[in-house]
Length: 112
Length: 111
Image (cartoon, rainbow over all chains, first blue to last red):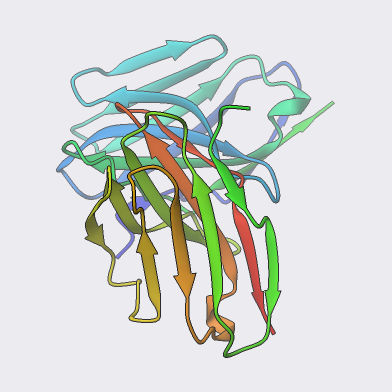
């Protein structure tokens, strides 16, 4: 039972433009959401997170938006850079245990 | 380097053999997690510890899998009688508050 879904397996974007990654979840008990970036053969690297009491969180080039009524979140990367080419995972957790449920990932390719 | 450390990074083993992975979390992180990731999928939760107590185990963790965190510091994940379906990347993560940091993973190939 996939509780976190990333329906776009891949995204190609030109350098300097905006990358928008989407994530949907089904479990209304999720109250904390994270985005991770992963290069091949490496572990996930934490990018940004958001609590359910907020609808936006920004950190440098990364902004996460949360729409609780739609059970949807998105990650915006502006401007996109070649080093952003990687797999991006959306993850969600409930309560205080921070046991994460992950989506299947979106592969981002930034074109020069 | 004060990140989450895992070893070995790669392990190739014959079916039926036992393997053990070690995870050293970020110092003073009281929570430690194990996940498994296969190609094309996101990481899947296996188990987690708060200090030395194992608080939850996923149903993915069959009886052949055992994890320990004896002194609330490093942790080991042992897989007994490995099967080809165990081939995956095993990820360890640790947290103190609400940010979870992952190690670089241990690749297991069962032949």
